[in-house]
Image (tube, rainbow, N blue to C red; front, top):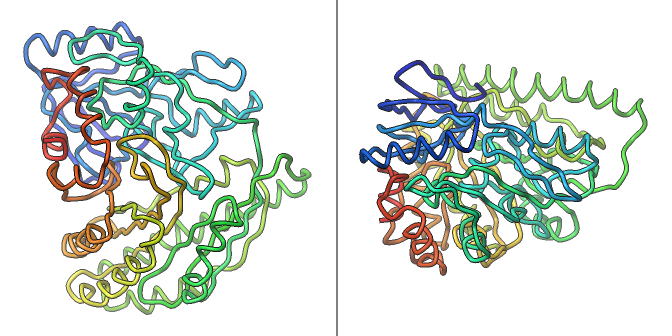
Length: 436
């Protein structure tokens, strides 16, 4: 199971920082089974949570009640025109491949595609591009199981509010998404001086379809990625060249970087020097490939992550404060993972991190097994000052009282949760903390 390890009594997420010991774990294959499981659990007062690929860093899917593993509930049910209806447990990677065979693509993807469609949309997983939106914005229909075990077709208002549902607004069963004709992307990846990146990123975001950068702490370099959408692709020779480039990326970003992280964990004093060496090792790459191959990159080095969305006009100040924070905390908590910066257009989904505003996402990480608490608490304090909203599937320490202040449609979501789960069947300690 991709990203999720389990035995008869425990489930652990991909990063290994969350553990569930449910009363019962089950792997349904039909909607009827899903409904019966929820109805049965609700009748005896047991909580229910669904898990997919285990790629959330928070405890959003953990439970001591009934744990539903969706990995076998993973089929494409129908493709009609540009719309696809899928079972909740299908992964983004599998869906992208099957859509490509049908001449279609998802409008946007993040840089990891092993998540399930239900997990990715429920946590607000997004992607990049000032002219584009998060994955959940493509949803046109949802069938879900209510907290009492009833199959519910979302009406227009429920759909508007519930596309990012946090696992609180029903257990998702099937999801319909509006796709686009399959497209390719021309990708340019190059290391540049950080000062030049900070100066040019806003402009690049406006003239390039998808722009992002990675800055390695302790260096003055950043790896910039700029992707332009194209309707057609390259000749076979170029495709073969891309295979070679992907192998080189694997060796650099997973094998080499993983070795650096392990050495840094044992010898933190070497991290700045190794980071400088890694930054020098990134060369310029330019290629064209199917969109889903360019969006997503295999991540085999395990880490813990926090990600915040801030208003676009605030990102430079927030980033500068994070840079200063790293100098303060590095003696106690050495940091050997890059900071990722992405931009995304605003949307109208109440619980989306980009709801009502164009946003820049700033993600911080540290290698699994290394300390991160002081670093992450410091980053969160910075982001709160700038009106930041946390990614629901990534580490944060926020509570309902202050989260409600940064989500203008907070009450609309609360009303939806009350409709679909009045008795709290889908609640757990994480949701109680963030929703109240």
